[in-house]
Image (cartoon, rainbow, N blue to C red):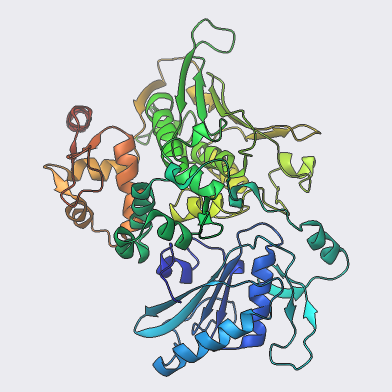
Amino acid sequence: MTQHLPINIADLLRQRTVEGERIEYKAGWNPDAIIRTLCAFANDFQNLGGGYVVIGQDCDANGQPVFPPVGLKDNQLDKIQRELLAACHTIQPPYFPVLSVEVVEERNLIVLWAPGGQNRPYKAPEQVTAKHKVLRPYIRLYSSTVEAKGEQEQELQSLAAKVPFDDRFNQLVGLNQLSLPLMQAFLTEVGSALAEQAPGLSLEALGRQMQVVGGPTESPWPKNVGLLFFSEHPEKVFPGARIDVVAFPEGAGGDQLIEKSFVGPLSRMVREALGYIQRNHLAETVTKHPDRAEATRAWNFPFAAVEEALVNAVYHRSYEEHEPIEVRIAPDELSILSFPGPDRSIRLDDLRQGRAVSRRYRNRRIGEFLKELDLTEGRATGIPKILKVMAANGSPPPVFETDEDRLSFVVRLPVHPAARPPQVTPQVTPQVTPQVTPEVRQVVEALTQPLSRQELQQALGLKDTKHFRKAYLLPALASELVEMTLPDKPQSSKQGYRLTALGRQWLQQQAQEGDR
């Protein structure tokens, strides 16, 4: 039975939210190769969350999709689905992907979503139609499906019945802990076609389609990842699902301490924590020079580095641990502490030099949702991005720390030297201004009157709604320069956006500075 997937199909096909190695493009129906790949995704050797097979989509020599796709004829669709069902019975233990028929640029595609299985290891025949089938264990290595042999097969066997914590069923709570409005809001935000069907589905039915509910029909259970993203109070189930921000304005030895905690669905929790840090603890120092017109600008802690470090902590921490993520902000550094430390496959020397690549991920589903929400870019990108952003800001390099027992992980972002207590001279005069990105500035300047999301996006000349939300609208709301006209009804079709009193004050201040 076909159903819509809880992702944006255009983003999937173009590898915007799913890495290329997790997508297999097939121009036509090839049961042998497709079943082997489905088996490999089910085994999920690196805990990446399985993958997708797109039938009817061709690709070039570099593995990039070609548009328009070659597509499938209308009279092929039923035949392929029947043969696929029969072929999936050959996988042992039995495994069946989620199937969706999609139309892209007027061409038919069959998209198979193959999440990591609950009963690995799986085996599939070399040839589906062979009379005497020989079953082999298949895994994904980079973008290829290969047979697991030797040490790889032994390692795969060791993963038997070891389902990552975020993908496990939680039998201690009921489905009533999940929020249907939160699930619907997620589908709407990511642009999933399933959003149109969601209002007519029960919580259980929608949860099963999103793979956050499972178990027998008579006794369904929520998955931990569903409780983390779609429960109003996940901290009641997972005490460590919290971000504590602790600031020491006078340094760690000072008398002043400012604390604030953030809880709630993971996406809301991390966005609110980032917004709070951005508004209260990040500042740009503008240094004017008498010998040249161009000023020097530097952030005490660049927001992109803070964002990447905090989202990485949310992604890779263990939710079996009761300790929260802790962000400590002192005059000389911003540090982020999470538990436990990185996988032992990462060498300490590689970690300290920013070359950490984990062989197996602790959470395989959390990353999927964070990527769909544009909160993270992809695996193995976090540390390199932090290094790049800090260097671009002119900051000292970040420090990555763990211990031999891998009990914790700390990311330290040293403050930019120019943001330290300034040594003012007649030649150099530092000025500190609140952080407003160029994108937020455009939003503020466009809101001369309240505008709907469509009107605001049009005023900025942006076509990609998802990019507009992530890069412009959400940061503008987090800055507290912009607010909703209907804050109690965030999903209302009549929702609009306007400047806050702070936004009007900031805009007036910019105009005055421009007149000088």
